[in-house]
Length: 153
Image 1 (cartoon, rainbow, N blue to C red):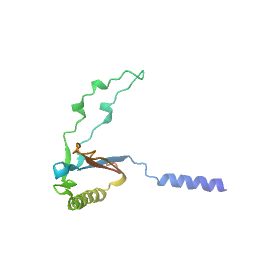
Image 2 (cartoon, one colour):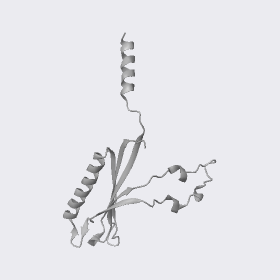
Image 3 (cartoon, helix red, strand yellow):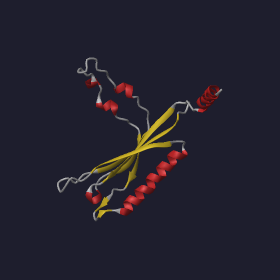
Image 4 (cartoon, rainbow, N blue to C red):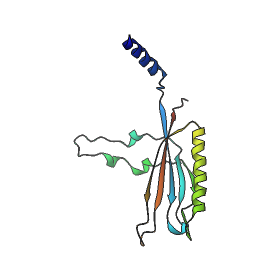
C-alpha cells in the first residue's frame, strides 16, 4: 500500500516539473579601478546568438589540435549593448558617488531583466587590482547569469 502511494506521489511530482527548454543569458559589468578616472566602465550584454559548436574541434589522439582553423575574428560579435558607467576613481581617489550611481544603474538593469521573466541564477565577480606604483590599471568584473524558459517563435 505504501509503495503504491509513493509511486503515485512520484508520478504526480514528475508531472508537475516543468521540462521546457531554458534560455541562459549573461550580463557582464566591468568597472574600472584605474586612478584619475581615465578607465572605461560598462555593462555589456550580447545582442545576437552564437553557437559554440562553430568554434569547437576534437582531439583524436590527445595531442593534435585543429584549433588553428578557428579564426579569432569569427569569435567576435558584431552586435552587443553597452551601458556607460562611472569609474571607481576620480582625480581625488575613490569616488563613492560614482559607486552609488553605478549601483543604481546596475540595479535598474537587473530589475528590468527580472521584469522580462529572467531569473538570476548566479553572480560571480573578480578583480585585477593595482599591484603597486608601476601598475596603474585594474578592473572589477561581475557576471550575472540569468535563466528563463526558452521562447518559441
